[in-house]
Length: 156
Image 1 (spheres, rainbow, N blue to C red):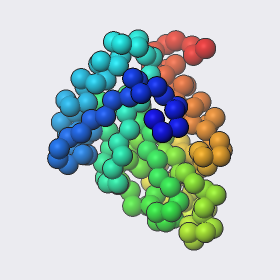
Image 2: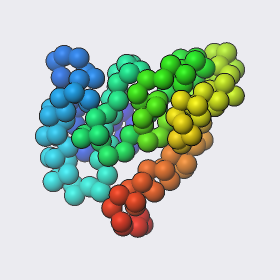
Image 3: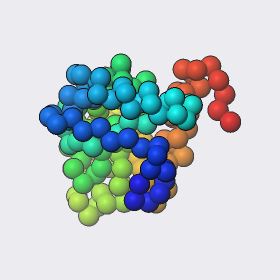
């Protein structure tokens, strides 16, 4: 909202009042209402849910999300991919962001690449600098390709 990427009427905030990761992986019901409302209001082809927590073990329930992008950044250290949380191992796409900071925070991108390949069993991941537009097109292409496979429609 701060940068105006989406109009405010297209954004819903869900506050759980408790452990936030429970609303994405255990009891997803609190999220379903706002998603249904947005779907009905805007006839959207794609809805995005963002979990803003810092729990490496948290991952969206497949009942809530059809496609999961798990985003980490290099400032957490090059050990993060090998910590093997469900987000890293089970997400449809892993994004390793802020690669431009790797040297400043002593993160070795080759170690992160090796560990991402191993922990994800060859599943896709993208090195990115989203703030600078690096890797964004690859991320978008992954999402749209999955949407096309799921719906049988061609994105235009």
